[in-house]
Length: 119
Image (cartoon, rainbow, N blue to C red):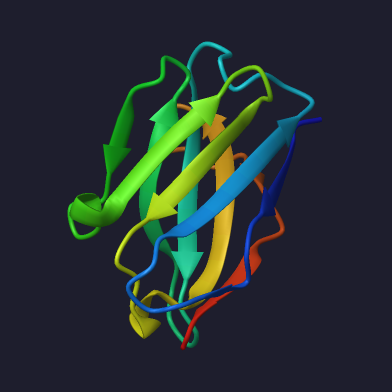
C-alpha cells in the first residue's frame, strides 16, 4: 500500500520560500506512469492543484503559480519537494501531496499539513 507523508514548517514569513517534502513509502516515485502532485486548500475554499513531478522527473505547474513554484525529487530517499517562493498570507492553506497512475489521477493522498504565512 502506497503511503505519503508531508513534512515541513507550519509557519512561514511573508516574502520567504515555503518548502515541503513528501515521503513516499510502499512504492517508488520512479515507477513507470506514476505522477506525484502537490495540492492545497486555502481556508474556506476548494482544492487547488499546484503541480506535479512525473516518474520520469519531468514537471508541470499550474499557470497561476508557475512563476513561484518548483517541484524536485530525491530518488535515493523516495521523496519529492515543493518550493513556493515569495509567499503571502494568501498562500496560507493545508498542503497535500498525492500520487497516482496518469497525470490526472490521485489514487494516494497524504494527510495534509497546515502552512500559515504570517509575520
